[in-house]
Image (cartoon, rainbow, N blue to C red):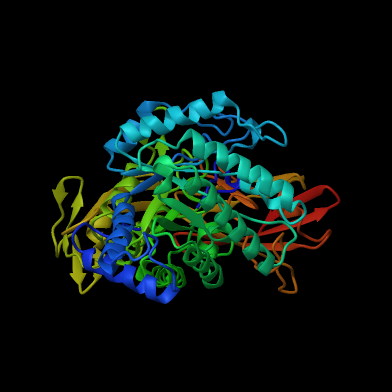
Length: 586
């Protein structure tokens, strides 16, 4: 994860192969890898093919045993200190809590740069090494597999390798020489990762590939030569940026083949289809394009590595803009649940072990409770099974209007619908709802009862239960068309009085009078959620940020089309003159 993803909006699973089922697949994969890559066995000369397959299947089995994984993000990788990015000091109780929830591996991102001396030794502060060893040993004692890496060093100083090749390589080698020596005799449940999301400044694609190959190869040589448990320790190698594009994966596969070592794991990261994950390009649903992107990426990852006997981890997965503890509506919750449900499925069918990126947005590391238990339930069930979902987790009922039926489309994902509940009370099919094929229709009588004598907002939460997996919650919301009022302000930000009236913001589009796009990203009319436009229903405001005004023309009226999840739209006009801004409602 990059430093720009550090605060509330931090970033970006798949189950590994299940015990038993994958044995033949793993063995076959190992043989395919050996023949396809042309690599030697990775064992002693003349080693029997059956022994080679066993060694490779051992690495695959170890990676499968790591599933599911969790990231201790924004702690020991934080800059300049452990608590600088808002998380408390790492304590054993935090790791105990994660282990108790069923996680079997933990990735511990560490940034070393601020704790190193100068050239030529680049000596790491012994006190800092001792602190990292303390956390690693807590995790090992809990029974975790532990992945230890070089994290934000990637963009802090490794990125400068094109301009200072020898200096960066010397520092990198010195760093891993020290770490290899310090952790030489730790359990084989400790895994080393060469570098997180490597990047190189002012270099061509070919140069980047060559530089990363050099770093990965040097890392491998240093660790293996240090002896002890490091002689056979599992080692993790990434692509450029941990990006799962085919060309970059091919480069990594070539590097792995050249090492002739059956104890190598490939690493990639996945944060979803960018327009959906970033919430700034108008894709507000986990739609067909989002699903197709995920399916294609996981298939490529599987075919490039797993199918050829190379173990693979998703060192990080999640969404770029969710969960955001300060702005929970950046990605609509139900759409996020569908995304995580599908990731669990893709991990299982492709034999990939995933590490959830948690920078403190999932587990509250002070209370040791999940901030959104329902979200975690969806993720946890995804480790072993599918869960049913629906086209939405919201049903909007217009206030002060005749109540009509509302229909959702169920997606059981191979499960069977087992009923609709209000709390613990089973609702009655025919009276409260009807089910035709996958169409679940809530009757006017039910909706009228739930919203009667209720103000704007969530009137009730219904639960659709399925034969397996997590239940699907449906919020019944009483709403009316939102109202935006006139406002004046400056280009540092315009706060618009907003009566949301129970509704929830979905998207905002900005156009000039000639129809061209307005705003900081002129390739799309959609404004970035929580960057260009910030809704705050609790304080009845909709704020247009300074980032938005930096991207619009002086004196030109901008028309905003504000769409809400109920389907309601509101038009608003904004004009900036100098540093002054006026906003008017249509």
